[in-house]
Amino acid sequence: MEVQLKAHLKAYLTHTLGSITSKLESLKTSIQSSETLTEEEATAALADVEAQLKVAAESSAKVEALNAESTQEEMNALVDDVRELWNDAKHPLKLHGVKVVNARMGGVLVRSERMNL
Picture 1 (cartoon, helix red, strand yellow):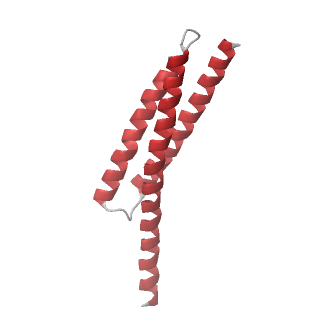
Picture 2 (tube, helix red, strand yellow):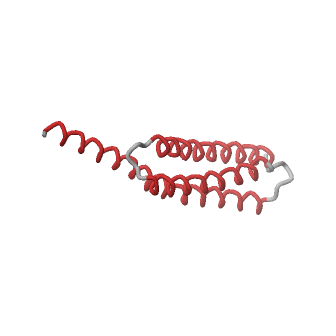
Picture 3 (cartoon, helix red, strand yellow):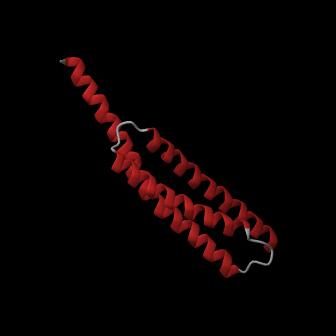
């Protein structure tokens, strides 16, 4: 029973980290392809996203190291790490996602003002 629980935990954490990584990669692509963000904004946003991706990769390596001999304390610490990563990743996802959208909207407004002139 305990072996199954560990296997399910490993699968769940792997899926969760995959989702976090996917969202961060999507945001990274949006930032890189944004034509309306300033160079400084894009650089800062990419640095934040890259830092989160690095932490996610480290956590993924720890999850892959889980095995039948892993202790309850190790598993709990890993769950806490993944939870903390998700909580930390939510802020850059929201912040930089909003910046990209706002920059696009600003570009749309400028173009519409030009069309009215």
